[in-house]
Length: 113
Length: 114
Image 1 (cartoon, chains in turn green, blue):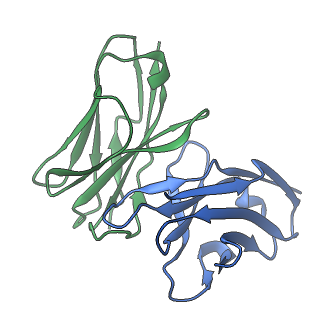
Image 2: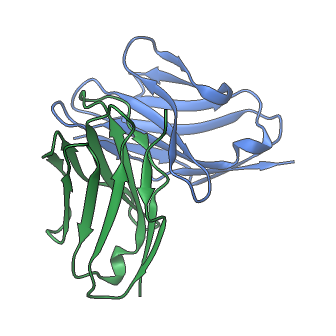
């Protein structure tokens, strides 16, 4: 079974721009979670989508948003990029049962200049 | 509130020596605990998971972890380090009941010396 895939793998943007990242979960998984990883803050939870609905949200500003499609693929959008948004963005998928193991993709590395 | 603390941001061991990576947790409910490994430029790979079925949990690549409620610990061990074990290791605890997110520790970078 194919793993979680994320596109693109690398991205360079400038301040003020917006960016959209994509995540395709493992086949059959209905939950997709997004995490931000930075050297300073470590791994932080952004939000989780399950059956096209945001089910859980971390403590990030409204510039960070997401959505999920009927095929469970998910996108994450960051508007008005700031230098501090430079990070590795990881998505993880699971069947959606609470406290279940999450399987991570390789991440998208975003650099904001 | 859920949180984990990993003691030691860097650990170095000789090849063939015991690996011990420390993790202490705080949880308002019986925790689900995880260890993940991250190799350079890659995502996170699950090593093992504790779900209260057994206090000693065996994972992949020869790793295991023991849940000790009295010490609120979930330390990761491997009897004999291999060069391929060099990576960053993250301990995580599941979110509160009703949530499907993970709270991660700050990570421990393991170096294996030949």
